[in-house]
Amino acid sequence: MADEESIRREVAAALRRHLNQDESPAPRTVIDEMAVNAVPDGGTLSLPPGALVTPLARSAALARRVTLLPASEAEIVPEHKTVAIGADHGGYAMKEMLKAFLQPEYTVIDCGTNGPASVDYPDFALAVAQSVSSGRAWRGIMIDGAGIGSCMVANKVPGVRAAMCYDQATAVNSREHNNANLLTLGAGMIGNNLAKLIVEIWLSTPFAGGRHAKRVDKIMEVERHFRS
Image 1 (spheres, rainbow, N blue to C red):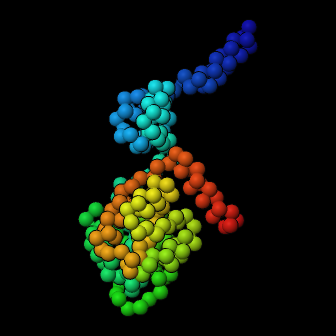
Image 2 (cartoon, rainbow, N blue to C red):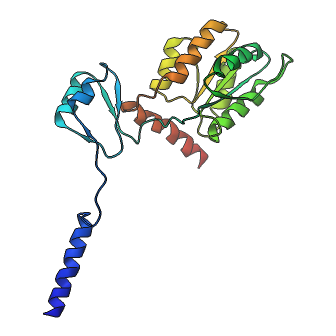
């Protein structure tokens, strides 16, 4: 009898552990249709970890083209946003202009060059890319004459997704679809006003996640494959 009672207690304890009855589970956020309807049509709603989405909320999201972005796909934005910026001689003047433009809102790491004397863009593109790859910088910006060579260099560095942007559309697309973390600009291709607009849009546009997350994962899988 004592053995049976002991067994029953052990079974009951195991069942309680299985059902998490020994500890009070943390409350889970419920996402209803009101939360979805508060998002503009075609927008994105980031879901907290463990969130429960009601069927009506999913229907509303489908009808209004709202992307429900799981926490695992959401971009982590640090409280103190640090931007690494660099340039060769062709982009030096634009770098100095953008650095002053960014400093009121961001912590800026200047990776050089520090004057208009002729230098090699790969050296500075690498410095910016390494700042991003190491986590020292949240985002990176590199400027040379056309923006193409620096983009090629930066994309050789593990963890970097560099995009050369030349207008508002490419700035938005590189962030929303590709989760680009390094921007290259061609100082010989665009003026200062457009450069500021591109940088402002690029830094403020969130990654859309959803179907794009799968594709970005495939980009990074190519990198992992050739590194192994």
